[in-house]
Image (cartoon, rainbow, N blue to C red; front, side, top):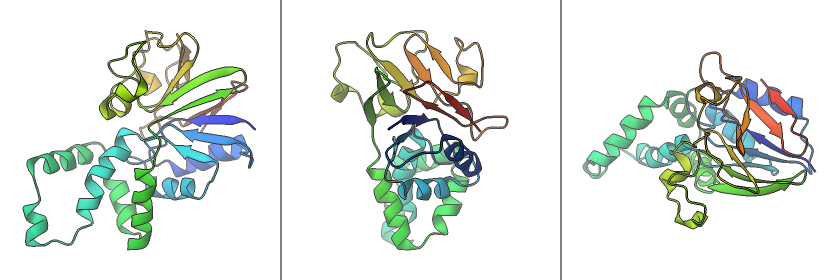
Length: 234
């Protein structure tokens, strides 16, 4: 009954399949993917469809899934005078932001799906976890895509905004919890100043950072078994 956590996949289906093979996930194991399955890499929707088939895999909402949810329902509409009239400045800004963040492969694969499967994908995205709290190997872990923006020790999780959870990067120079580890994706470990091994999983000051740059040139996809600490890379 092992618990695994995996960093941002960003459409790297081959790396994703490689990690699953390395892990050898069993039916009574649990896998958490830290969000940002979509965009950048060649097969983001293929990864998503695979996760949808896995009853013991749970995906957190990342900023890239949030951008997709803000844009895809509108893009699925038939072009009419009414739909054109619904194009607001905020909607155009959201579309531009998603385009700047590598949405092309997601759009291409999503458009190739039949309408029923498109709706199933959107329903799956709407149900993604905002965070998860798990225990494994005697340790406690708080999982969230980006971090806890505007953090305060006494602040309840319900008081954090969506932006705090999926966009605001964690402060890796600060310990957030005395009794549990904060597990995040979102920030490539190549960009964590405190990381002595850029591109590898970062552990320090109560953090476990898993985004090792998949979807970028030279990046890797990483996972950890929380109970044993064993690391996996593709």
